[in-house]
Image (cartoon, rainbow, N blue to C red; front, top):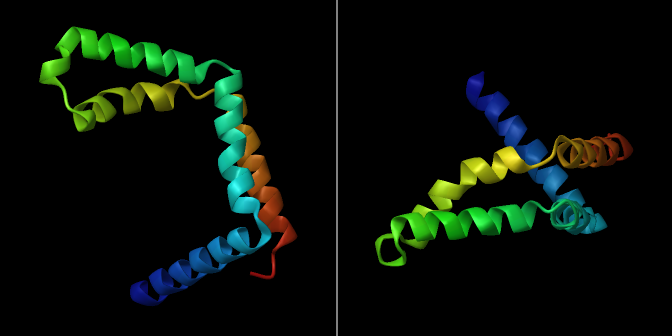
Length: 101
């Protein structure tokens, strides 16, 4: 029963992903937060945080993986609720329009 449900969910995700690709909505959904985050200053805030972390730890003592691990929680926390809500609204609208999936 559990395997069947997991299989159904995987098939549903694949169908949604395929429809997103076919309609071009996937690229739109990727571009929306990118543009909104730049617009609200998120990118600049994260860049500043990266510089602080590198300065604090020393460039010779930090790897890209370490930097990503260090800044990811702050980056997620800095995403404005308005950006999250707009993206969620767009996804819900898309799913409602393609309810036959």
